[in-house]
Length: 230
Image (cartoon, rainbow, N blue to C red; front, side):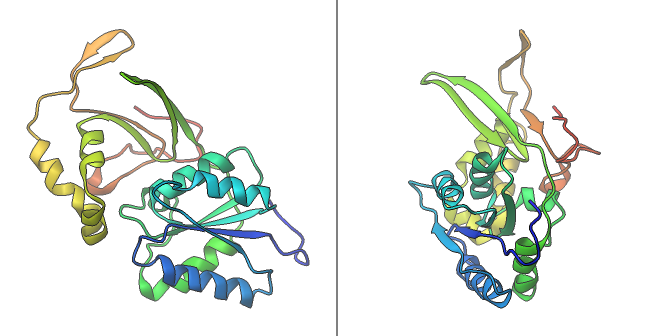
């Protein structure tokens, strides 16, 4: 939402504190907001029990029209799910493992020397509308629902991602997925039913964007083209 230059935005910062660069990014955000002459932001920390959605609802209830997310893809996804359909602008400071949403949106890779630049851009750049995917699935426990900004997957891909320990992701970044992926590379396909047909693909990906690490992706897919790719 565009505001008058004399009317500063109401800012909320949602931060996942477990990442190494989370606190330096938060300090940079507070410093940047102060230097811009804006009111101090509402700072909301996530936790294992409350990983982002509750904080996003609290930010909206407080009147925030710009939410800065300091975290990885999981935090970004849960905040985006709540902000979808509103005029609130979401800025991203990517401090997670793969940072796929930030990569596909063309945001600067976060390293120490560019921290101030990334934070300032996330706080001041005008927002662009992007697509959000919604998925419903059935398990033995019943129906589940969720959203995704980048990719939703079934099969070995999903099993690999869910099986990587948080400590390994923090230590090795997206490379933490390489070893388990290679270990499953020769495994048999995963039994799936697609449109009434029995298939055994290694993995089934529904993607909203062009690429993920290791060169996997869909050429030409964009997060603002209104299309999901299988």
